[in-house]
Image (cartoon, rainbow, N blue to C red):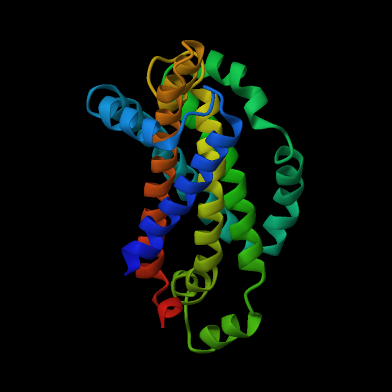
Amino acid sequence: MKIVKKIIFPGIVVYIVWWLAALILHRPILPVPHKVIMEFIMIFPDVLWKHMIVSLYRVTCAMGIALLLGLPIGLFLGRNKEADQYFSPIIYLLYPVPKIALLPVIMLLFGLGDLAKIFTITMIVFFLILITARDAGKNIDRQMYYSLISMGAGEMQMYRHVILPAVMPEIFTIIRLSIGTAIAVLFFTETFATSYGIGYFIIEAWTRIMYDEMFAGIIGLSLIGFVLYAIVDFFEKKVCKWKNI
């Protein structure tokens, strides 16, 4: 029953909407869904899976690095007012800067390989996680701190028993939002200076006017997002068990 709710029913809804849009537009640029699905099945074993694996590797590495850096720094700033007063202006100054515009500079510094793409995605997602973790840490009721301090709890115990449990639901929410941002940036970074990745595959198919292949690539990109969301949901159920009661 859960599979029907999470996969089959949404898939049917998307199929019907897509099919109706293709019939109404009636142009080669939007093929009917069953043709795209057949194309996806045909090219996946030989070509498409390689591009999907490369893209999945890039985006998961970037998300992992951004989380490992952004979460502890954000929690530290949320816990320490003095540090937050010094570093918040720097964050506010750097966050609005469109990081994707720095991609040419990043590529000159890190080359044309995976490192430049991963660094670009990491830089964008890092600030989202950092700011969310900081604000979540600030919103924790101070009475919870005082209760543990009165029982002799140390700093590490404070993080383990109060701060992390309190902020994890918000962290998982921002991770979900960051996945969409990360995949959008991934697509952009893969449209040039590479020969692998879903972004490259989609643009290359578009230039050859192979719209069935192009939409097969788009399906592959959406499947990457689906897998990442499923992983986040799995870990949220394990970490935030109280939400499932």
